[in-house]
Image (tube, rainbow, N blue to C red; front, side, top):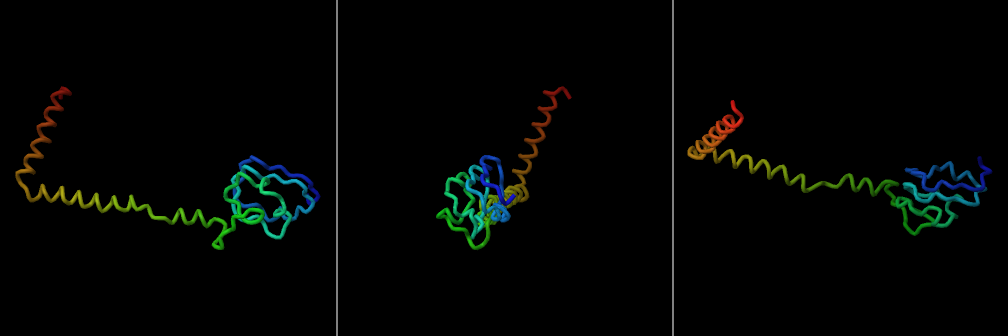
Length: 136
């Protein structure tokens, strides 16, 4: 397969990195990998870097020559790791708020006997009315 002269893999829903084995295709005169979900560095020191940016357009995760966008040293998925490691502070703040509210609500009914009787009286009256409406 090293004698292939033209490859058009555009819009094929490919994802991941460009396989390093593609660098062995030394006779390729035309390459189109555009509009896939490719990511990572274009293999260096190969003919793949000599093609124009239009060969790789529509792959926002691609980096390295011929693009100006440089690859991170952390690895090919550095941006994805950063997104996954971010803390969702909204969710973290909900838990203590819920616990505080629950404890406050519970404490009111423990220490205020009149409020406790009023609440359970309301619940009892409502349950009787509901049973009467349902015919029970």
